[in-house]
Length: 377
Image (cartoon, rainbow, N blue to C red; front, top):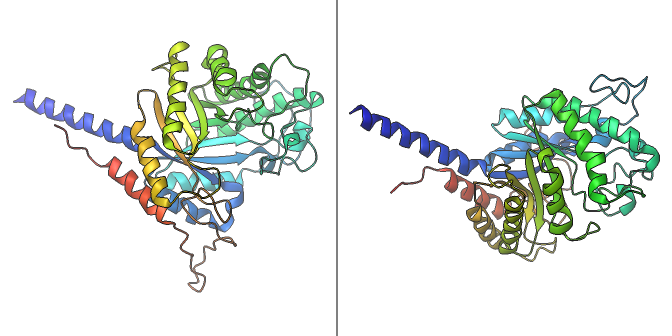
């Protein structure tokens, strides 16, 4: 009798673990906390309503630290480039809102201010990612950049790691508008490690050794690094794999089959370099078109189903749909953009507009169906 009860309990635990893994694979990228304004609570409500387990909150360094640190440098962690005046208010609000709605948070740190990069004026606040010059880190600024970036990662981890256990370091470094350091350097992968990975990792781990370092956010576009697989994923896993607790990829393709094929290429690289089963991979941005709006909501939902059903949770553990809201009149969002900020008012004369696309409900229904108890044979 006791053996039967024990077996029953084991089955319950296995079912719960299966459900947890299934739900945990769903994520949304992203909440732009520094631009959400009054719409922030509404957007977080809608994120939670989809049923995803994870959300990425993007924190742009340029808006957190508008002015250079002051005073003398120090060996003290978090003050290696001086004394900082950070503005965390918008990130505080977003993290609190996410956690209060049961969402797990990965915090992405990116986009350095001009004073630390030497990029042309205004580049830090230009988020269109269309200007190659805005990825500049000048030689005269590199020493300051490394120290100030380590400080930022340390202080962000110290502040948020109890609520946001993972820290994504930078965004798509193999696109010039995001990372275009001044030459000379031996090669771009080593320069990326020296400027972003090494100081960022050290800052995170000094604040909390248990916090997760996430990257490199490589896009599967073949850009100025060359082949995304041969010139980015391969050398990063070969030489620097131990510096990432989670390895991340972005992929935008015309169909989910192509995206899944590229992810399986990443899996082959894990095998080749001895990381398979040891290092989880997240697809932190994906969609199936290039902004041309040539797919119906139903077609996108079918692509979503294929991608999530194709995941091998032994290594490819999470995928984050891009994105919650459209960035313009025609885009990737589950919600339509609105010309004015959504106003969260007690006065019912200012109702919240219904921004849902049909895709929102299709996505929500799919997540729900994959998070229910599965009947076992």
